Image (cartoon, rainbow, N blue to C red; front, side):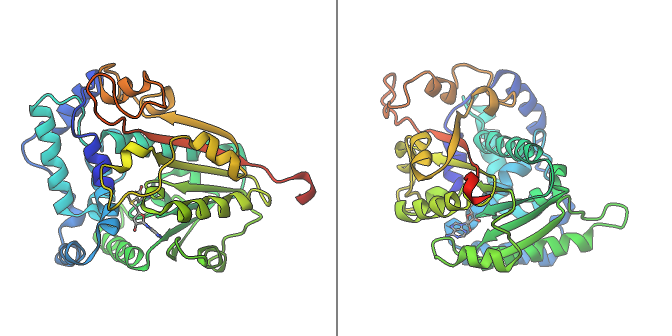
Amino acid sequence: MLSVVVSLTSSSMSMSSGKLQDESQWSSEELKLSQLLDTQAVRELHVAIQSQWDPIRLSACQTAAGRALWRHVIHDPLADLLAGETYLRSLHQKIKKDLLNNARETSGVILAVRTLWFDSKIDAALSSFAGEAQVVLLGAGMDTRAYRLTSLKQTDVFEVDFPDVLEVKATLLEAATKSMNEHNPLKMTAKSLERVAADIRNGDWVEKLKRSGFEPEKKTVWVLEGILYYLSHSQALQVLKTIADKCSLAHTILLGDFMNKPSTTMSSSLFHFYSDWPDDLLPSLGFSEVKLSQIGDPDAHFGLMDDQSNLFNKLRGLPRSAQIHPDDGTPCCRLYLVQASGLPNETNI
Ligand SMILES: C[S@@+](CC[C@H](N)C(=O)[O-])C[C@H]1O[C@@H](n2cnc3c(N)ncnc32)[C@H](O)[C@@H]1O
């Protein structure tokens, strides 16, 4: 679950300039919660899902909590509402503890970098398309890009997730619409948004997407953020292959994060699929122009990774084949941020 990725960051990290920013952000003793959480219906819904949802579904709320608490670098005003008080308080406590202990990592920093990386790559992909396009978010969870990225104004957005996750999300956003006044209404920045209830382990999810208006011949950005490692190897490969097949129909850009093998040991019951070499895997499935970044690389930094002694900068200094850190014998847990693309064959145009 993403909390594990979040807690991957909580073990230790220091960020020189990033840290100063963080301390002022989190210095107040009390966590200030958004007013959007302040209705009985919203509170009751969060209590209900806490007891009913499995860890995979709940990871959607944990991810939103990360975005909510890193609000000084991520503008996501709906994140508090979608995360719920429990996760906000728990992450806030972890962050305060990290700061108190002068930890090398502040909890949630990976999530912040990952979100900013996907935001920037989505913006760049859409600007390279120059015109109408579609974005498909697989395992969309509590993602609110359809409300916050202005680059989506000519873009149809499809959010795919389990039916119960999408239902709760819609109910929470409806509650927000009621709470927000006419001077500050909830506005979509995307051209359109469709929520597609589907389990991507099953073979029918593309049909469901098509029935919701997805057009295989239209330029597409596929966003696989925090999803692939919950699938088995064969399911993840099937999903990637299905997307690769679409490359023959229209210009396609795939954005995804990949755990390496040591990362899956953080929770062997939740994490299954990994790839130590996604830059070899994706071309073998039919993608081209694969660009791989590690947390801390120039395009996956965002001013949050300045301290050279932090875990990610230390990992970047090691060969990618290293699975155990030579200094301290700890597993080299890496999260690769990967962009790949595909262009239609001329014969198919
Ligand atoms: C860690 S969350 C990430 C959510 C979102 N992409 C983000 O970054 O905020 C993982 C999401 O994937 C969804 N998910 C996991 N397995 C899925 C499957 N087989 N089909 C559809 N959605 C799935 C979960 O319900 C959850 O919302």
